[in-house]
Image 1: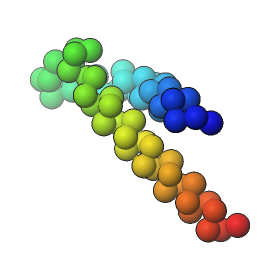
Image 2 (image 1 turned 60 degrees about the horizontal axis):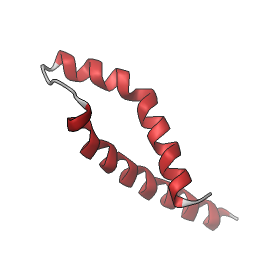
Image 3 (image 1 turned 90 degrees about the vertical axis):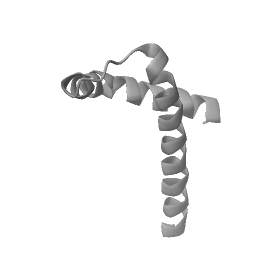
Length: 63
């Protein structure tokens, strides 16, 4: 799987949970727009990439 494919998959995961995140932000009085969410989505993909690499490394240790 290429890095671009993983990023797309991570974004699909993020979009799955976006309604829940929006609900929590609305309750906190924070307005969510696509302009505001873009930097967070970029951060999320970086976190997911690091988590993926960590899991991959851990999986290789167990073999």
